[in-house]
Image 1 (tube, one colour):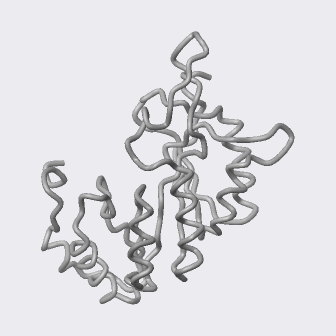
Image 2: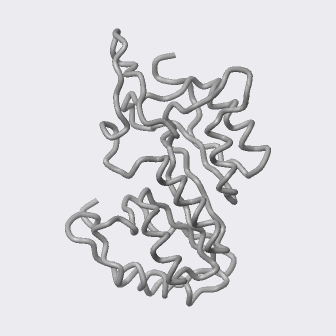
Length: 209
């Protein structure tokens, strides 16, 4: 983990890697290349490397989708790049399931990232200005909006983005997040599969079930 600490920087040896044509590469792990503290020049260097490998697909994943918009407007993304975003929910607040009382917790108490609703808005706009495929990661999944006897509204909001694929999975680190019951998640997956490919990650009963 030490190589991910300190000021944002590129590992030069990684920029010289060769990729097999037809491979699908997750560009960054354990970090966010599009975070506000990452200089634009570093992002452009990574995109230049990806542009040099047109027969390879590269996946990016961020929670800071505004950075996508800024770069897309400058036409910086090569066509072999998949633009992914983590969108764990469409809620602002949740019942604190760790409490015996009716206590709410705000999303900002769970994550310092921009609100998920903002990321969905950015992705809808991004779809209008780039031809790159979009990807959504609902991981770790948090409770989300739904209507009784109707498809989850969360699924409808994702459908508006027209993602190439969606990944769905529960928290793997026992953080006791405000996550949905398993049957609600399975219903969400069922709705998502009507319009996109779904990668099923960790699926289990919610920690309180």
